[in-house]
Image (tube, rainbow, N blue to C red; front, side):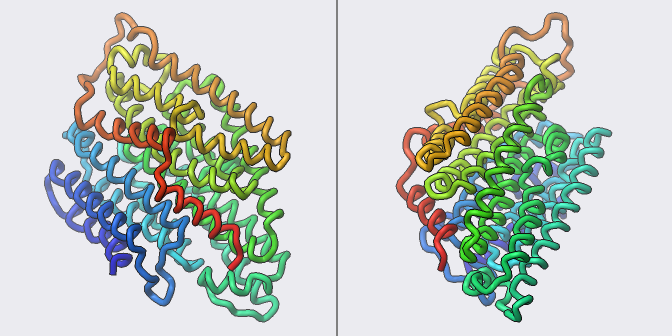
Length: 479
């Protein structure tokens, strides 16, 4: 019952959120639903319930990780949203609030899906709920970003569907009909045709990699991340990408069971390094600090793919980095949203001295930059170092050197933009058409996220370490 409740809760809460006429009450409905979702998540992780619906709905260890991240990040973002939407008294949020809840429902369904077709439906649900949120500001730039998102991600999800057909046909070609449950696919993985299975993995990697934002399928990200409100950007960078990564890991597990660990590993390493290289190039000279976060997300997705490709302890590091990236990106997007509202611009040509004008948000943005680029003592440092150490232990010295070099380029590219935004003084004589100032509800949520990434940098809690090891073994060990 708990699994059914946690999936249905967001969809049911979306009904009153759409029906109520008060723009002030609506964000609190979303927040109440997110608090209940977090409570149910804690109950499920403490005592995992059995699978339901004939095995279609159930939690595996990597799904538990993504569910935990989703619930925590959504709760903190909706707390921020109660204050954020109050700053937009003329902004109609009757669409945004139900879409947020629909997004949470789709992401939750994704974490609990144990059937090939169901994960596709869950990912498509998140896409349909995301598009209206990108158009929240109702500007020409936001409508362009919305259409670009819909076009590119629709192609990606169509390729993922084609890959799913290929995966099933890999079994049918030898007259095996195992079904669409992952447990059934794993049990008959050795019977799959290797050629069709390889083609299926390529198509599924491209399809779900589009949602994840791996290069070169990342082209929707800069526009979308640049136009969405900070709360939506945090969810896209932390939740949507993690759900897509989860889909790739589950499919990779089928290939590992079929004896194709080297094949999937080489593909993931190649696309991971390529994503990091593309991000490093576009971060150089980037003036829009929200688009900068988009390219940082492309880089982080490359790191996750690289860790999964190397495998072993590096996969453990990638799973930990997935958590760290989600929390850190949340802090960056929320603080960047505060700076954007304070200056009425997101260009480093206009925004200077954020630490002086908005001391808390400006400082959080600076700390977030240090954290996401792998500086100690924050959580991302631990994840990145774990992956790097695994590469050198496996004697992948050239790969490790390339990894370090790309990390340095990303640090330099982001550092130039962040320093221009946060340091110095606000431009003299510049009239900023906004009265926004930091408030409790605008800075408390990113401060909560900062506390979490500091905790994960100084000491990873034992229950999380156990869950990370379980997820690593679950993905790489054949049943």
